[in-house]
Structure formats: structure tokens, C-alpha cells
Image (cartoon, rainbow, N blue to C red):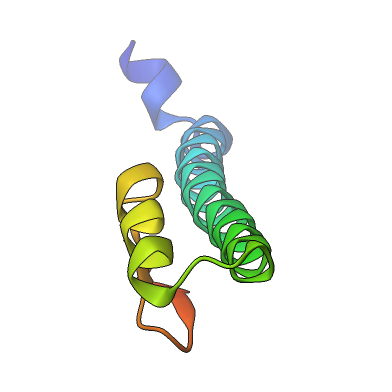
Length: 80
């Protein structure tokens, strides 16, 4: 085991795999946030087109998308 860990290329490979895994997880979390934000914006526009007022739109967003915020003008999200 010591001879494997002494090999600098093997250690570089381990760091590369760890770093790329962390980056992939961050990318997936960001992508999920962006997709839910776009869907929520679409549903707010659709709700206003159907005649819902701001209070009902806000309740809908808080019910189905708890990480999305809505303040009568904008639909936005905090990252993480």
C-alpha cells in the first residue's frame, strides 16, 4: 500500500477524481435550482394569465417550490 501511495501519478489521479466529483455535485445542485426557478417563473406567468392574484401565486410557489421566493414582481431563488 505504501508503494502505491508513493507514486505521484496515482496521488494526482486520486485528487483529480475527488475534485471532479465535487465539481459535478455542485453543478448538479446549481442545475436543479435553475430548472426549478424557470419552472416556477413559467407557472407564475401562467397563473397571472389565468387570473390568479399575487397572493394565490405566492401560496402556490411556496407550496410546490419552497426554495423559490416570490414578491409580486420577481421570482427568484437563493443559491444553496
